[in-house]
Amino acid sequence: MDTSLLIISLSIFIIGLLTGALFFLIHSRLNLNRREQNLKKETNLILNRAKSQANKIERQAKQKAKEKEFEFKKNLDKQIKSEREKLKNKEQQLKKQEENLNITNQLKENDLKKLESEIKSEKEILEISQKQLDSLKERLEKEQRDSEKTLEQIANMTKEEAKEQLKKFYRKEVQDKMAKELLEIEEEMKANQEQKAKLLLAQAMTRYSSEMTSEQTVETLPIIDSFSKGKIIGREGMNIKALENNCGVDLLIEEEQEIITLSCFDPVRRAIARKSIEKIMQEDRVNPAFIEKIVEKIKKDFFSETAEDGKKTCFELGIYDIHPEITKVIGRLRYHFLEGQNLLKYSIEMAHLSSLLATELESDKQKVANRVGLLHSIGLGIPHFVEGNYSLVGSQFCQKYGESKEVCQAIACHEGKKEAKTLLDHIIQCAYNLSQSRLITKRTLSKNHIKRLKDLESLANSFDGVKRSYAIQTGKEIRVLVNSFKVTNDKQMALLSWDISKKIKREMNLNRSIKVSVIREYKIIEHAR
Image (cartoon, rainbow, N blue to C red):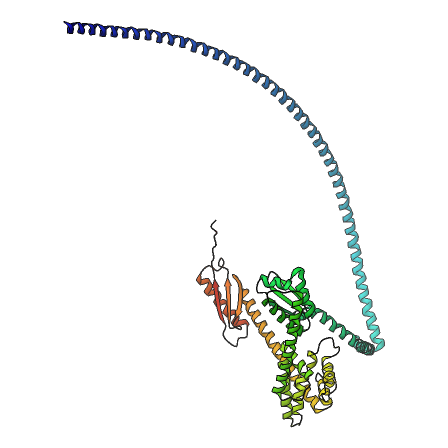
């Protein structure tokens, strides 16, 4: 009984739920339909409003477009009118110009016609005058012939004979005048030749003085590091000033090449300055007072060394009884140069040569000739503040320190500027001339060799595609660097080397074979950044 009631109550409950759910669905459906209708009405209202606004905007835009079109048409009409007026003005100007041109052309044509008529009349006048000239020439030629015939009859000689007589007459007069003028010119030349020679010598000295001074008076010294450079310069340049004052040289420090340039006419001063600078670069602390001490010490050591060198040289040559002051100057000759040769070695060579000449002449002056040969150029080692020719200065110096008159006379006349009196004088002059000729031939040979190398390089550089060339191994080989864009392969290199060797063989006097090396390099460089 209870179970059946439960079942019935459950079924009633379920049926109630289902009916409630149906009613809820029906009610929600009706509400949705109403909302859809309301939304449709609202959307229709919005669309109608948008359409009305769009129509208004379209009408306004059409009105503005019409107004702008009307204004644009007005502006175009104005521009067209102005352009038409300008065209009319230009046409009028062109018409005026055409009229003016026509008038000028007519005037020019009239002028040309007048000129043509004048030229024709002048031509006729010229033809008439030419005919008259021809007739006059004929008359003159006839008269000249007649006059020549009459002269020949009167003088009883032909025209050629008369010419020869006139030539002889005038030749004598001209020769006399020329002889007088030549004598006057010779006298003037003799009077002025010495002055002109001095002027030419002064010009040559001024032209080559800079080159010679740079070769003979300048010496360079490398700088070890920046610290040593600072020691040489010092605070506010005080150290370098102290060096210049104590050594008597000019110093120039070149920062790019890291070298010191020493400039002075006296090679002894340059040598002392070089040794002082080398000593200063080895020291830790340097100041002007310390520099003065170093320079004094180096001077003392230097002069003692030169004195020892002079003594050794005299001992080697067998010269013993000589004053110490002379030996000091002999030692200094090591730092002097003559014609590119060390003066001490040159003096030793002169001593040997003079002694040999005296021996060959069977003279008893071998020892004296040896002595004079060593001392002949001692004047070049004496400080430059002593004025005069070096041979006379050397003679006076040797006379001052006890050398005999014979020795001093030979020293004074070894150049030939003073007359040679004794056999010893002639021996020294002969030895000097022999030594100088050897130096000249050596210099000419070196010049010829340098010229030969330059000619060899210029010959190779004359070929197309050659960048540069270098003559090496004293002219036994020439290396030719070619442009890789012009000489592109091995065949062209072989042909170029063959052509260069043939041209060298054809144009240069060969006494030996020359190796021709052609080098080609193709280099490409890129940078990765």
